View 1: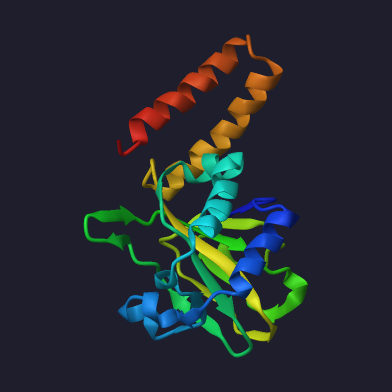
View 2: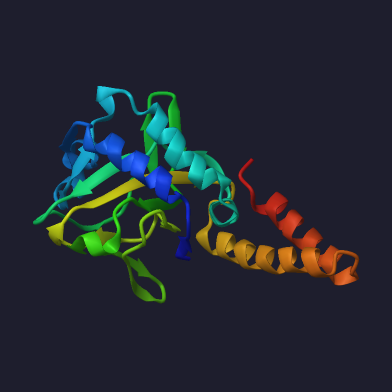
Length: 224
């Protein structure tokens, strides 16, 4: 399932994020890639070792965690600190799979859901589409600034070459309460129906039945 989450960051938040990143040091993106991805990765990333990232992480992750579509689509248990990636003309990221286990030392997590938050407006650059190979076929995403794309981290995906301008994104990964992508998709659709019933017919018998089914499927399928 591919979800486009609108308005994760508002315009004033975008201006702040971009201003902070404009002053920040960037390094070769290959430094954070695994052995296979390193061969096809050509971008730059905000140097996390340079510090002073707390305020930016709070801004981006705060926007995500407040958004109901993110919460209902990802069902997050753990989320990684974002990587802030920059693509300039000639840069791209070829077909790759995200590492299944991320983190370091005693802090490890499974990457179930990948999230890209777009920090540049689509008219600011040419190329740079996020291309995801879903069961339904390839999907190309070039999101509006402040929007996010959620998709299974188990899918092969790429970033097309940038030919003009600058593509700036924040990328994070989520360990979901529900490991299986197909189950998460079913739960997302069921929850949409559940919320409509709770709003429009809270006392109806079918509302109680759908609500119970959703809650008990979460209980049945969750990893905790």
